[in-house]
Length: 151
Image (cartoon, rainbow, N blue to C red; front, side, top):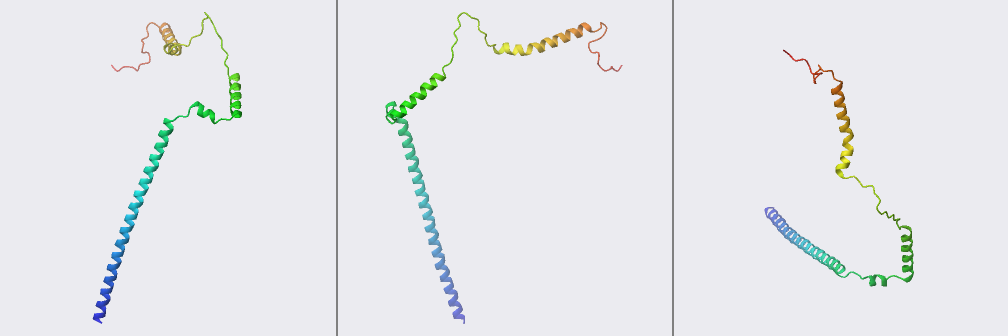
């Protein structure tokens, strides 16, 4: 019985070693596949970015001329475009008034507009202070509502 138990343990150990070797090999394959996929994806993105940059530069360098753009239009489209433009121009012409030697209202400057807004408040404050000064009896001090002082 002792020999068969040792034999079983040896077989279990060999099986475990084989499984460990297989798992190590599979992990290596998976890692190399992931690295390969990542490399391929990076190359693909690089090619795509280079292609997009080339197209962008090409379009920037070669702008279509007016002749190229007009070649693609049909006569019907050109006529409708001309009608649209003439309709817009007829409707949107501004009226013009010409005045010679006539005084025009000018817009006030920044300082003038500030003074126009502040002047009424300043005039009201100054007139109120003047009326208080004139209306006050001569014996009264300026601080009439001050609290009594301790002796």
